[in-house]
Image 1 (cartoon, one colour):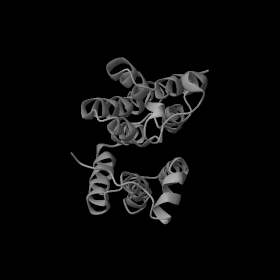
Image 2: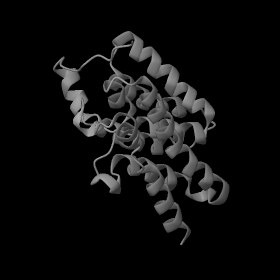
Image 3: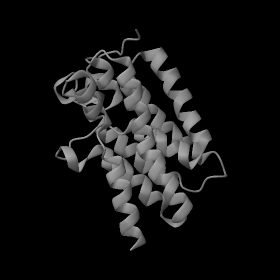
Image 4: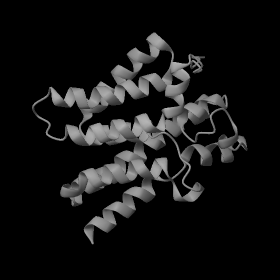
Length: 192
């Protein structure tokens, strides 16, 4: 029963499409018809509203952070299940026909909840990669790869296999970006 409770709560929390909700309420736009059609913060930024993009990023992080935090406190043996289900909730939200975002902000929230240092490692690596390349997608992909590598070399962690799975999922959600990066067709993110 505990497994079902954790899985459902984590999935439902992760599946709240904040980018879609915020742009509909405050801009009267359907974010799925702008830019990449993605419901995440990067695409909300393409709508031209930095405040909504920042808010989307924050709320998407919290929908990974909160269910995992609750699981840590009440069902610590089910942490990985909670992480995966909140992440999958963002990727495949039931509310919008299972067409969600790429999961990077939700993953970042999960990292901060599991260990603050992991979140910092992700952010620093993302910022370095982004400012060198100007590709948000490349920063997300490589930073999600850096996490299991960092864990592998840090003897305090024993769950690097879980983070390899998370990397594979993030790589999968960015498969179109990878094709565009290879073909040199990926759009660089502008900093206003």
